Length: 154
Image 1 (cartoon, helix red, strand yellow):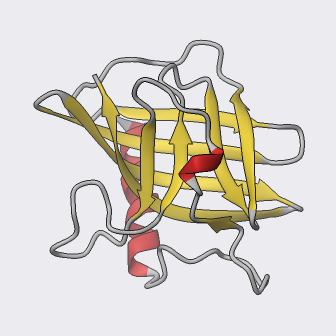
Image 2: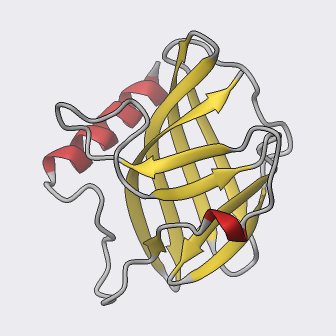
């Protein structure tokens, strides 16, 4: 219950800041950019996440660019960091596969140079699991945060 409250508070703060989809950095190029899906290995059912703004009329999967792709087993994550498609591996040993309404999932991915924290709130819908939340990337002593939406196959 406490984790959910903290998550909702953090999400609300980002939404109220007025710039949820922009990197919190002084770099001219955003840390996170759209992924060229042709540079990512194909899986049976990759999980794709898009930049989201949580405004009225936005699609359930977000309307922005695809910025995160997870492998079917969630062990690999692909992002485009400052123009370079980058593969990261899960730090968590036991990755949850469930999709319960309101469930909060938190996974950490790393490649030794950067660290990605993924916090998602899940909602089962028909044969997919909708997810929305916060993607944080820690690079060069800075943390860049993005609101995202996507779907997970069940």
